[in-house]
Image 1: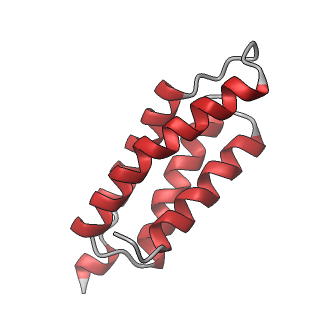
Image 2: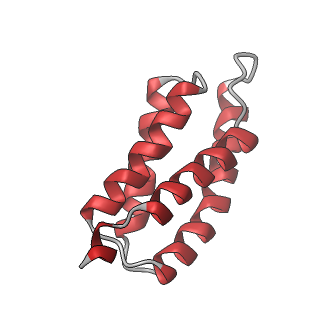
Length: 102
């Protein structure tokens, strides 16, 4: 029962994903749209393999997913990323976490 409420691993994973994104997609206003898209797609590829592994190791419920996404989103907001990019990646992670392919 208490494992159902334990979100430590989810929060750490959300933070790890945000750190990875901060490294791969810099918040640089000089990047043009195609370069930013290219970097975003590369980051999604890297994140996808980590998400698959995390899903195999951790039993996720709505509370753990909410904590993971909240941690991720606020890390990006605190780093100054724009709302559109933040929302795009957060939604993409949510879809990836709910997808059946492991």
